[in-house]
Image (cartoon, rainbow, N blue to C red; front, side, top):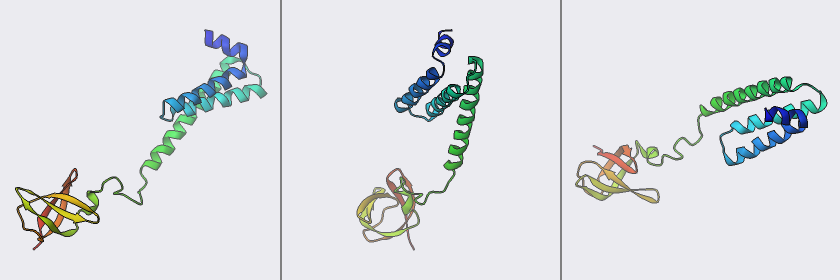
Length: 151
């Protein structure tokens, strides 16, 4: 009941201050939820500054605004997740080399060797082969490229 008494005694300013507190919480606890709850509280406070109304109506307005803003944010954020990236292998360096053919810079002995791709030397795995053998990259496991000999 103290929250209701606080809102009743301070009116619109209680909503505005509460909204600012929720917006500040978003800085500490990221996730996007508190932004919309805080915005709904601030809008409710601004509305009650200009249109006097009882606290039950204020709570209904706050609830409706909070739900609408959260649902709208979820719809927009989910729609943007499916967009294709202009750099699909940005954080998948090994995956971008699959299908390339290169020469071994170190022989594959006991299942492991090395190749040079760009300015990086990569560890490879596959059947034993000599230096200079042309291999095709067929996959990767973490940062180790899987290769097979090219005929």
